[in-house]
Amino acid sequence: MKIATWNVNSLKVRLPHLIDWLASEQPDAVCLQELKCEDKAFPLAEIEAAGYHAVFNGQKTYNGVAILSKLPAQDVQRDIPGFADEQKRIIAATVGDVRIISAYVVNGQAVGSEKFAYKMDWLAALTAWIKDELTRHPKLVLAGDYNIAPEDRDAHPDWKDEIHVSTPEREAFRRLLDLGLADAFRLFEQPEKIYSWWDYRMMAFRRNFGMRIDHLLLSQALVPQATRCWVDKAPRKLERPSDHAPVLVELL
Image (cartoon, rainbow, N blue to C red):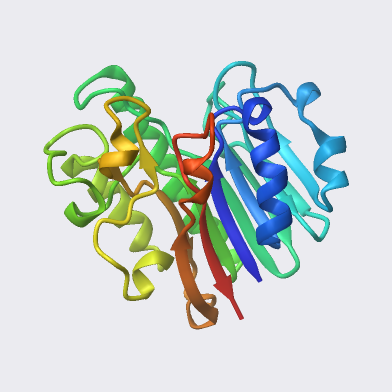
């Protein structure tokens, strides 16, 4: 089983890239973030023509998440239960025997800001819910754009004490791992300076001035099944790309 996560930063704009990528990579399931479209505008016909089912949780202009899968999705959950939030950042579904969650974590704007406080509250609610989900779904993948680079090696060295690399954010990420989740990318030996996001400005992609903020976290039942995890930089090289690259994991 091949599972991917990709912040497409506007599904409407990136749809041709996505359709081509699905054809070439043939993932079994893909978690998308930043759809930036309402549910009624979701391109379901095009996704189905590409051979995929889709469940989605959209929002006009901002946010929005989806799960595309070759098998139909079951037991769909939208949003974090019990957490009052107008922003559409979560969708979960069972595909085969694996519980898959597509998450778009709050950006946070700046350490100490109101949006940063919202990010920390949101992460706390996510962690409590995932703890509960793991009791029901031993095989679970929490995938998405976390807006957190977990360690120094996950960000260009010039990123210091800023949003995405701050101590509170990294501690929140660690609390997710402490539930029994594993960062699929770090299960394998990886080259240095591998990132998944690069700003559009300042020739950041060309300079590899980026961060690894897109993650696939695996429950302990899936860790032994993981055979490979990598960042696919090819879509980031296209014309009018998303600022994120897909991240993929292969499971036996």
